[in-house]
Image (cartoon, rainbow over all chains, first blue to last red; front, side, top):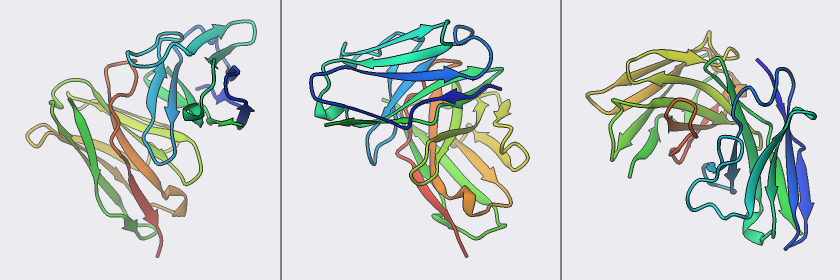
Length: 110
Length: 117
């Protein structure tokens, strides 16, 4: 199986944009869909992006996802940052019926 | 809507067996995949394994030798059993539903299991 690597933390001011990378260690990032979860302190994770770039109903369009085969990475982009976006974000993918999570990125809204 | 609730002992002694149950309400376990995920204090998410409603299973290789998942359709529950636990198994344990490669949704609220003597 492969690993998914995320930066430990990112920070940005309200109203700005943050981009969180999730880099796949082996095999193509395009081989299997990538999902993103948001986890606020003391809460269970919730889905913000699935199938690389699809938003579940109820997730603001400030959240978007993409993949880049040249960097073999998936990206979660959060624009127009709000204080409520301060949370941990995890990427997830799968391989041969095994699910793999990235290590998580803490987003701090300054 | 479907809700999941984990239950089980909050404290387990080292070398003993950890047993947790996830009770499904508002829906049936007779469909979908049902996974267990854990999160050590201050750490990230780790998928442990899933069980399909037919009883077929798949496990994370890192815990495969110690973990067994089971499902009880009559009680609308599924369960996790982990043997030979150590302090490294101290974590919040979550159960979640998914349909193949779709998102894990919903999740249970999680239950903290501490391994300590």
